[in-house]
Image 1 (cartoon, helix red, strand yellow):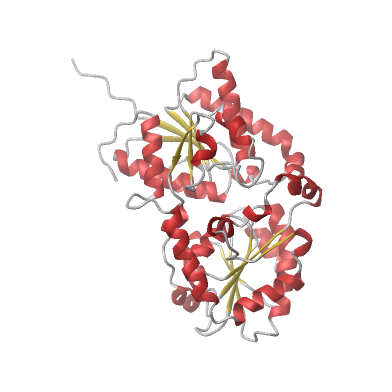
Image 2 (image 1 turned 90 degrees about the vertical axis):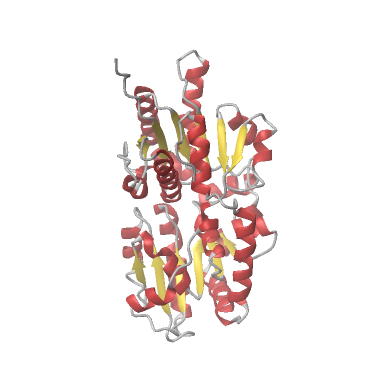
Length: 399
């Protein structure tokens, strides 16, 4: 008598913005490689996860909000999507749940599932989250609260596990994916976009969320306007992400120096290599730029109503990741009322004019790689191994 076919494991992944989509796609790709394709996926993700085989429950653009007062107008829809996601997870009964970043959304999903489990509902699948809340930057007390409703936490920085392990949460350092980001080909991108080999190039990266892009583009644009006369052959590159491309296109129409807008994610590292200096919104991209050795000035603005709360809760020194990790100012940072065209123009011009800036940035990038790397195992593979073990997925192949 023949044995029934083994059930193909189901991994439910929820990512809520561009950086989480990249992380989730990496885990999916590694799991497919390790299992020989014997794995299924469900959940919420973007274009990268879709390319790996996910049909998203709803568009992740609905989750790209930031800050207390930015979230409030979207709260009813977010709460509805949280309920929809929880119901879908319970209906599918996956072998494991992995939520990725997007804490305002994902940790509420996890907490609801934990409460149902605590109330006696049969929820046997492990509850995993990837990308720790930055308790080392703001509200360290959250580590204790979060540790109560997760089964395991996957973190990107080597100094993070201790914050959660002291509260009994199993925590695994998997490494930061940026530590293995490829070197780009700047000459190739310059040739394709018709930028002369010797022309100074400024990269402008205004963020991945609609609100932050709208707040930063005017100041960034005025900075470009002031730099253009000083550097007559200046060119501007703007690598963008789905969800904000049209906002960027509309926002740069009045710029006297029209930028080259790059929509293809595959162009990002070539763009980094082509840049002499970058002006970027605070976020993961600043760490990527640091690892690529690009001299970078960081600016950021939040909803003015969020500022008083932020100042009380946030360690401002930890906002720019490269500065925090290396314990020195690698990337000058201008926040809120200090993020003005005057201050940004001076800082960017210093980067252009300093002949040592590129070498110092490259050295900082190498130092960051040594801190964030995980040796021979890529971060996505290490994360996939944790997910597979939690789900009891047999692995015929190891990375």
